[in-house]
Image (spheres, rainbow, N blue to C red):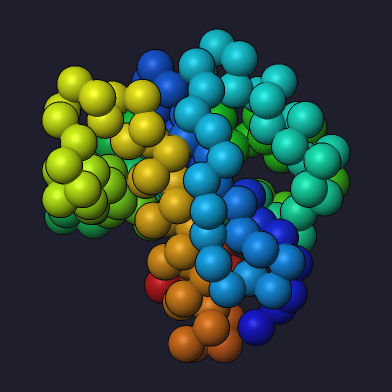
Length: 154
């Protein structure tokens, strides 16, 4: 398992959820939910603050494993993150991460109205934790580094 902080990003149309791992890459924790319009500025500051090993961006693929308009949007946003600096950006299949986040919030007693502001953040935590767990169990990172889709895929 590679040690080092990772940032996890869940890209939404209106909001972007951000999570980070601890330096030992064992646990993901929430960082912020930011408006899409200001997300790159926030992420730029987080790159400087945390100096992450990599940024993990959720790749929305439909349940049939097909690309969608959201897939293209997430990859475009990931390319903008990659342009911020030398940190590799890893794309990881995020199927059901938002569904899992909503379910977790409902289980915790949060209403649909009150979870709107944190669901992207929780989805980012779920995405990042899954990515860490895959690398720990398989010995290789999941997904692929942006610009190199031939690299390992879960």
